[in-house]
Length: 144
Image 1 (cartoon, rainbow, N blue to C red):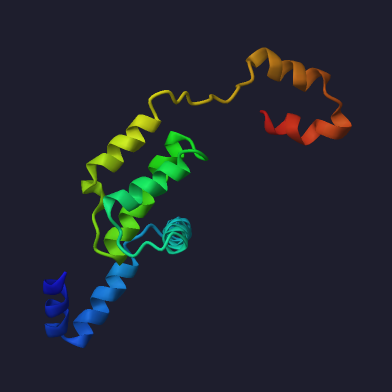
Image 2 (cartoon, rainbow, N blue to C red; image 1 turned 180 degrees about the horizontal axis):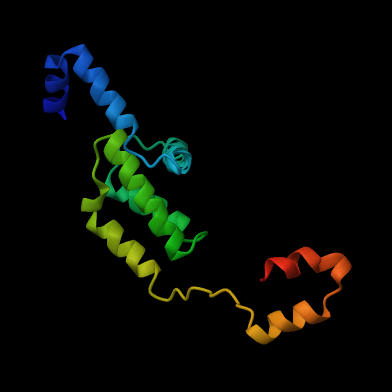
């Protein structure tokens, strides 16, 4: 970390500005807001717990708390977003936190994803034939 500060002090301002601009574009544009919301939520949680250092134990405690609310798939997406935002904003690589990864994997051991129900052809034909046209005509037309 000290090397980074020394390096930055030797970097010309225009190069620093270009690097800062490039860094701002590292997160996906479509989901940047979600990434930053997840990051800020974690920082808020840390502040409420008086956490000053972002160690593996800090992340373990956070994800342990979240595992009571969220399913494994959501934990993984939060992990992914935090991994990216912490790498960009703090220079911390949480992908090296092996206990954290094992914990999230363990949370998913008994996870059974729910599948959406799909209409059969017969159910679709029945709808087209039996549903009243005055209410469902647009839906019927869009089926073909």
